[in-house]
Amino acid sequence: MAHSTTLALVVLMALSFSAASATTVNKSCITGSAGAAVSIGYGGARASAGAGVSLGADVYRTTCPRAEEIVRAAVGRAVAADPRMAASLLRLHFHDCFVNGCDGSVLLDDKPFFIGEKTAVPNANSLRGFEVIDAIKEELERECPETVSCADLLAIAARDSVVVSGGPSWEVEVGRKDSRTASLQGANINLPAPTSGVATLVQRFRNVGLSAKDMVSLSGAHTIGKARCTSFSARLSGVGVSSGASKDQTFLQSLQQLCTASAGSALAHLDLATPATFDNQYYINLLSGDGLLPSDQALASSSAVAGADQDLVASLVATYAFDASVFFQDFAESMLRMGRLAPSVGTSGEVRRNCRVVNSSS
Ligand code: HEM
Image 1 (spheres, rainbow, N blue to C red):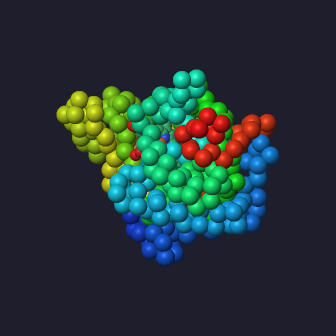
Image 2: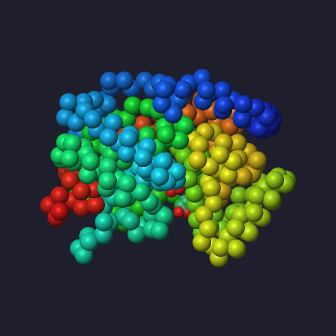
Image 3: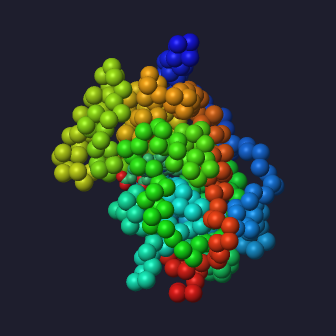
């Protein structure tokens, strides 16, 4: 009881002060680039990426010193041409890492005797940005052939996409190898569905070695980008509606109109208030019932029938809505942890010349 009262108070405070808080954080932490600097205590440390590979921030310092600069400039150009591209590149890294680790498997094309991950349910007609990755990879190959892996390229591009959208920055750990295999089944099983409730979402993250907290902070990626009507249609039939929130009804009605008028082909912003800015508005939206995906709104749902995970998740939503700097710090740390998800030991890797095909067949 005491806990729910405290949570309700935090929620109320968050709703009143969050906009101001987000602005202050962004202004006070600007580092010269678009992103706010977040200091993470991994400097110089090496993280294991499994399969005998160790990750570090300085891997390309001697072998391809301009690698990060090339990726940053190309991501900047791509996002200037298509603002949604920041979201699409960020999502590619997530969909890569959740299927047998961050190994570039998501980028492999289907071939006559090879099935990749692109036709998996969460990916088909949804993932985008492959051409942008191709163009960056071509540039990297010209600069330093067979040096920068496609998996590392995705990790750097994801960070740069967050920064260019106004979010936090962090030092990307690199040194991953690209897979020679992919798993359609792994993509279908491991990636969470937008209709999932909190228990399933937490379980999906735990299955790959990430925590409930990582799940909540990384879901904040939905502060940018878009979703198709099919991804949130369950919201229109009442799933994830928080009772008593009148604004919620107006929001759902506008989504209903959008999808009906377009016969379901429309896209909606994941964060209706600040759709292209990486901020903590996603969590503020959840508190007022304006989460787009059922899985988004579920994070803020009442804990009346739920257990410890639901309470933790709901209190993290309130914390992030109240303080953007806590969200930025936790998001950067969780991105580093997700970036360390590794292929199973014994899996052989390579640096692909072309991200769409393994080297031997290119
Ligand atoms: C927690 C579980 C998650 C679920 C259930 C989920 C589900 C989805 C769905 C259904 C879409 C819309 C796809 C479409 O309609 O085409 C989407 C978009 C997106 N997701 Fe997630 N997601 C989750 C976590 C994440 C994470 C961890 C990240 C990154 C760290 C992420 C980044 C994004 C981005 C940026 C978009 C917009 C992409 C674009 O506009 O191209 N998501 N997600």
